[in-house]
Length: 282
Image (cartoon, rainbow, N blue to C red; front, side, top):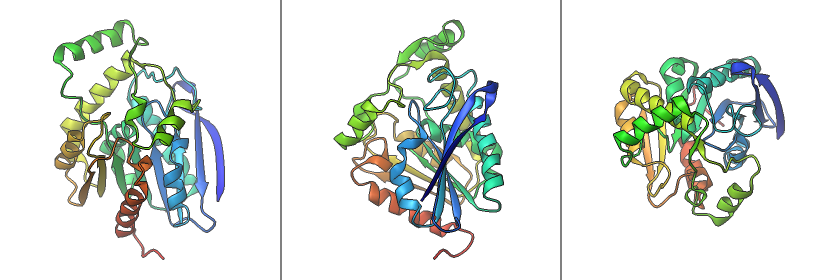
């Protein structure tokens, strides 16, 4: 396994951290990991360790204000700062892995970033895998609360509002402990601006999902306490992709790649990728 890392200049001239893992042989395809809220790309080692021996290269970028990237923590001026950064990284991958099929793998807020990215860039990808995509605002958020978030976003954009519940990421206590002690995981409250920008992005994806037509696999934990499973079903039903599939894992929490049964999830993704690979895979 070959591991490389570096930085590139992203939006608003911030230094953006990236890393990638290459198999021992020439890569057959590329997995582009788009991580979730308050975390970073280095938390996907289960996925890396499963797919590298199968001949996949895995690339990950830390979003603006996340992980090792610069920027105010979990803060963004515009949600498109994330998709613009992802687009720049995709172009870098094109230079490194010419003509290799690229599959986007987006989790949680990364699923929202990924879905928004697909609206304009799906022709650059062979398919997408979205895990617990945060594409739908929780049903218990009232219009008054949404309006308040919008006002705070304008007046006090860096004000912290909510915090990610660590116990909700996985049923595996070791994963929760690692999450809580990881210095690159932000344990403070999410800023008002990011919250408001996420809601705007959710509305756009909900309104324009029918523009998405590439092969799509959606994975969702049935007992997810951080992202309601109904969002995954809404996205599945809303896209125009003839080739689409949703897998609901009953009893699983938010991070299906980090659940005790993650091997089952990764094998499901493996089988789906093989079925969508342009050439037969050994």
